[in-house]
Image (cartoon, rainbow, N blue to C red; front, side, top):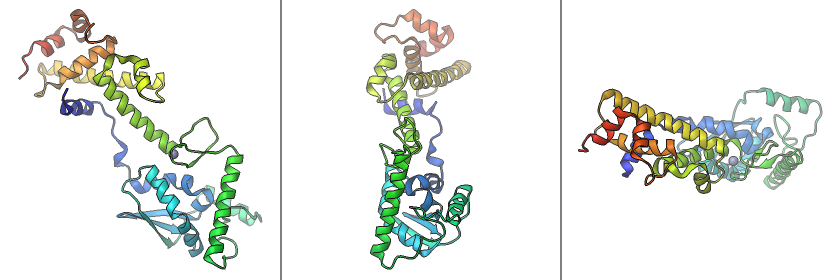
Length: 285
Ligand SMILES: [Zn+2]
């Protein structure tokens, strides 16, 4: 079957992609996961200018410390496939809005918490040298990670972001991306080799659960049927006749029978007389 027909057929049912999401919103959502809560409380991704992310920080000291992390942050964006691709960060001192989480950090600070990781408006006594600032910052980050790991947090197996204690091995961003990718792969397989069934598809798509397969199959059948119903209602096929391809995938997926074994009566039965005649008796042009 032609690629064009496949693309068009998939277009019939495909859910709206997340491409329309504002990249700065994606970055903001992942920010504390990437830099940790304390740094996130003292900085804010503000804007994207071409390939540069502008980060507002609470003070020059925070800008300086955060700049040491630039490489890791850019790598984390790349792992999350943030578009447009960010290649550098720029820092600007400005106002950071206080959220509830940040207020907690501040409260701890005022309560005399000497905190292992960044403690509020500016980091302790300013470091005398860049080397000292960097060493301190590394210690802070390591202490933060040690504490998280001790509390059962672990790294996302894909991008390395810390995730809350659970049985999951991926952060929410990676899990979401992977599920979307898996759905696309499964849908293509069900279109091209609809009779594989769950066992057959699961051998080809790592991590696919029965429930996920059933959901995709159900949505696909529903969309395809909608397309076929429209053709029947109109009493004709579209110009490229892609309903023929959809009809055969529909019948095979619905019945789970391989094409060489399916009986003409079964096809007629599943499509109904009217649709069957429309699809198989109208000469292709
Ligand atoms: Zn991840």
